[in-house]
Image 1: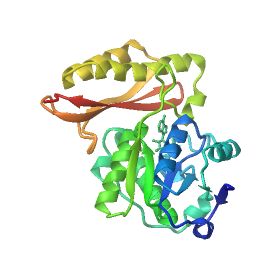
Image 2: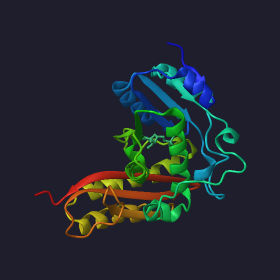
Image 3: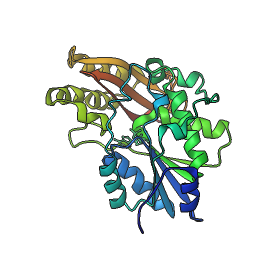
Image 4: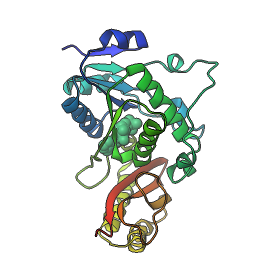
Length: 278
Ligand code: AMP
């Protein structure tokens, strides 16, 4: 089957099939992490739609919207290789009318942890995800655990707004040395990359501990060892559904999440842990 490139709602309607449709939203510069999401979608759906759209709404003016990597031709090759049916690649001006007014609020949950460092980011992300859901009308959509707060907010939006879409989370794909794959990794120099390894190392050190206090302290110690080249925004141990910090007596699943800047590149990573299992 030939890969279809859709640029509008009309193109999507023409391409739509009747069986289950899965959507994999991306900003392009596709890597193995994206491939794993596509494969998960493939297993569950008759038709796989990958959207490739660098969403200006989720970047603030001081962020990297204009220099975000755009590798559309290589992305099409990845999609062909993975048996994707449709690539949805709209133009910014077709997605956002100049006189647009309405957008999604991510609430308090979108203003904590990652949201505290990227004001407006999660509002812009949820707005584009809802638009993509309405345009593609998928039965299910696949998102990476790599962006754990994003995944939690999308599940919250689906519940709060009664969206008839199943959300699947996919595990984080890493380099052999532990670095989580990211489209932004291509900005890292060799030295930056060595410094960046402290993120996954800190998460592993935390995950080896038992109590919230020990987990936070041992992850923090690894980040501190990395020195001033690693500029940490936050290290947080949170409830995976709410992203609120867990208490010392918390039991159950938790996410240990970190964000840091290395040179001019901002990286995030996280692991899921089980605390105080009975
Ligand atoms: P992005 O193109 O960075 O917006 O990411 C698109 C989707 O791919 C999101 O659901 C991400 O969470 C997911 N993703 C990004 N990096 C990884 C990774 N290393 N492993 C698994 N999923 C990922």
